Image 1 (cartoon, helix red, strand yellow):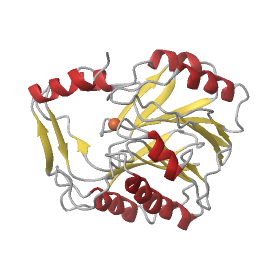
Image 2 (cartoon, rainbow, N blue to C red; image 1 turned 90 degrees about the vertical axis):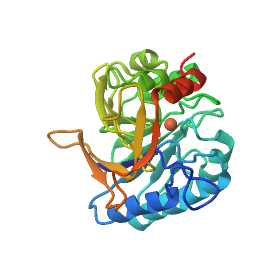
Image 3 (spheres, rainbow, N blue to C red; image 1 turned 135 degrees about the vertical axis):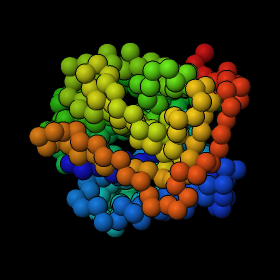
Image 4 (spheres, rainbow, N blue to C red; image 1 turned 60 degrees about the vertical axis):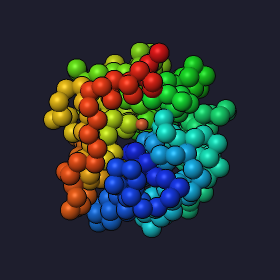
Length: 292
Ligand SMILES: [Fe+2]
């Protein structure tokens, strides 16, 4: 089983460069183009912040670009929500977020409610998206209703195991305050819900940089952003983002499963600063959007 894992496309209604000088459509096109020869892909999974502005146009662009890439390969394109997403606009264009190989919204199971959570079986693996979006906030939470639904989904194991995909990581790099403040608030509840289940891997985004960690014995992978990559060589407490789209190639089922490999677009701007936020500015962001 091979997944192309993308996250944080931050597409907008308008095309052209955003306030940080990043053309988000170009950034997505570039990484998809550079991934065009990857063999054996079974699915594309995008873990949230599909839109930066929650606009319908952004979801249409995601459907065309990511869905187009998947459609050419005859594989599903699976999307989850992030803190920048807007559920109604997301649902209006992407439905459950689970697009089959023909581009139709056809999940095998779907959460009954506004939250975008659904299941698709791919190559014997159950890909389960969850919705960690908390409107108006930067941190994430998976609701009790979704956790109850998840427990029910996981009662019967899938042929080869389950993969969770959602936006807000339940892990953080020690000492990076912004990650603690804006991560998944109820990671312990999620850990309880998946304890003893067939969940083999958790895929997340949101932090715009690659992190590997564990949640109650389950590997957690955070893929860097398509829009930018956060560079932790900035002064502690400050934040620097650099140009250059990234993606992760996820391989499951082999002797070393899961194997995770980060890919970087061949962008001549890669590594150039997109924005620098000093410690005071970042503290203000945390105060406004962080865990209550
Ligand atoms: Fe995010």
